[in-house]
Image 1: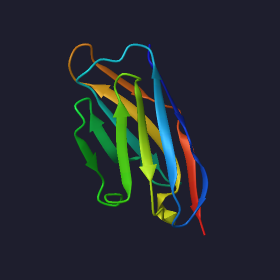
Image 2: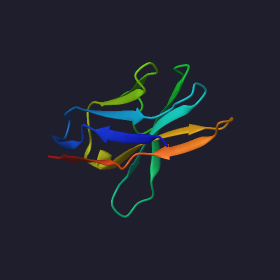
Image 3: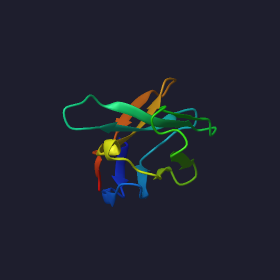
Image 4: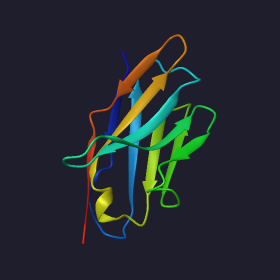
Length: 118
């Protein structure tokens, strides 16, 4: 069983920057997709950014040009650098690792709180 653990959340001022990390323990295979999701109070969880094992990235329109996702396949880690943070970026941020081919998997981290406030 794989465990994903996020770190790096906290309180940051509007316009500031914050970096999140996600680390996986256990067997991870190539050909999977890692992603960051977030959930604001009273709202549904939404996809923020994703990255394939080959390095192809995708971003939600609301964070494009402000957030940067990256991963280190050798270390089984993923990061999210968040710049020019807005109040609406506040929420619990989750990392997720999914693989559609055998061995299939869908793992979630426990989440880390990000609060952006002026």
